[in-house]
Length: 332
Length: 258
Image (cartoon, rainbow over all chains, first blue to last red; front, side, top):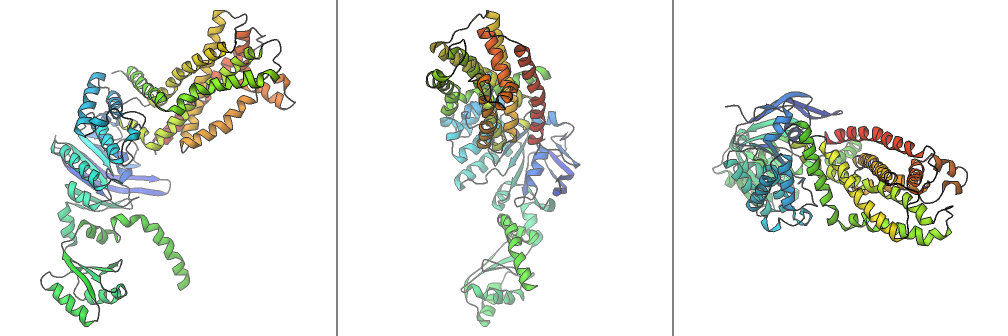
């Protein structure tokens, strides 16, 4: 049994004329975390729904824990756990009753389901709230209960669809630690996220998808070195100087500098002496510098380089397109 | 586990889950207990004196009708619950579990039967307290009436399941239920004899299955002439189930596989 826990080949899915997945391939080794990274609408959730047997693909194959998601769907459901951004818990049931119900639906004897429910509530720090209806829980507690429900039957493969979206930083950290503990115990996790920090911390391998296509994959370090170079971040005293500053920096950069919110980003040819040289040239050009910084590329840089937009801004895509429309007309 | 015993076990687990919410939601508990009591008292004591119900005391005429109306609406919690389950992603959770696929809808409609039994007890209690009596009814007639009205409730559970699955929110389910289905119960012999209604409305009321079933209940419990009402009522109930259960199941499949 050396087969990868998740193997996806040529997966395609359309909703009417909208192509959600345009033939994606990726795989995850047993006992590792695969991060599916992409903006909203990239196709992450569609991929998870197909792998969790909730949705059938149009073309391509997917195997999870050695089972085909389409042909062996019924058998596969006993081997997977699903949790996500919607925290699918019954709000009218208590935390304990939710987990007991899920255990019984896995056909565990009732007594065993109850023991397991207590065990999970204890581990997820929900023992004190065990007898309260889930509707009284905070967002973080709900997510933990949702995750606990996914773990009732100790599934070897866990799907987490944006598990920390909308959580406060403390709850997010707590959930990360829980996920790490599961992986240390041998569970394979497929995690979708739009937070680069989350993928960076949790994922052994990252698959970047955008508009239904895999646009890059590898470890976090591989992705960062793939785009290479040292990153320069330049904050200006006067935002209006951004264009001129970009021109100056371009002479020393590997690629065209990008201006975001008046801050100039660029990938530089070399690290040593770059800051001093840049400041000198900017000074000559009469551009006032407020802050200048060099760093190794972050996953965010990777994302911007690959997709032309940052991961967490992707929601605004449509608005930008709408705004551009009238401008075109003016030019015409 | 065999697939049949799996379905039965999953259905019971979910039916129990559906019932557990009732005592925790005061509005639902009120809908199943206080509301039928209020309706009964309102009609018996406020409107009843002005309604000519022929040879019977109005309370005797009313109770079979109000039981028909209340039990038909017993399945309403299914519409609320299903639209909530879809919205909150619980259907996804259930579908990702190795459980029976039919158990979600079966669990809903079965828990409605239990709720309707509770309503029936409350309605009989308030009915007897207000002076209701069976007339010329054998134990068999009484029982057949109870079976008929529970069957009607079961048929309406499927109608409400469909309503719930078509509603984007519990609020929508609520307004569909109360603007489309509720008035139907008034344009019938549930509260007043259809013969007293003006032309047009009277013909509508006579064709209304709520009239057929209310009249069937009265023939069983009060000894009024049955005509074809009793067996026609069973035809209506089975007919509604035959139409709406497959529609609800098809809709469930569609909603679930999004």
